[in-house]
Image 1 (cartoon, rainbow, N blue to C red):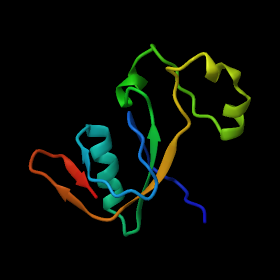
Image 2: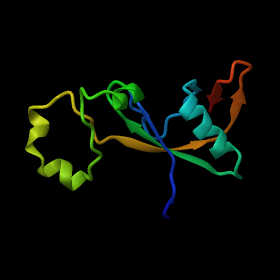
Image 3: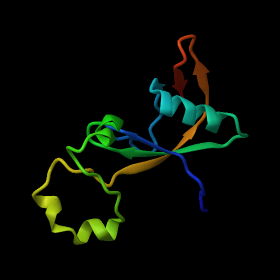
Image 4: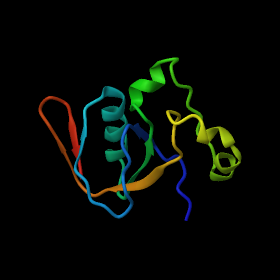
Length: 109
């Protein structure tokens, strides 16, 4: 099937497909994103994208990140000489449950 309008969560770690996780959502923009997802009927899906250094790296000029298709990545030979650039790694995640904490954070299962 096709998932349209998939929210993307860009973080500095890789999530492995098929693994169950307990995630702590504490940054305001992502708390808002997850609250929006959870306000709709299930199933709740989010795209998880690996971004070295996490979301804070999108606010700097230090590393330019451009999301590419697999074929574009395979044709780009600079991937062998630029080890700090963004990897093309992501997973489709389904939220099965969640908890709101008193300090505004969300715990996502």
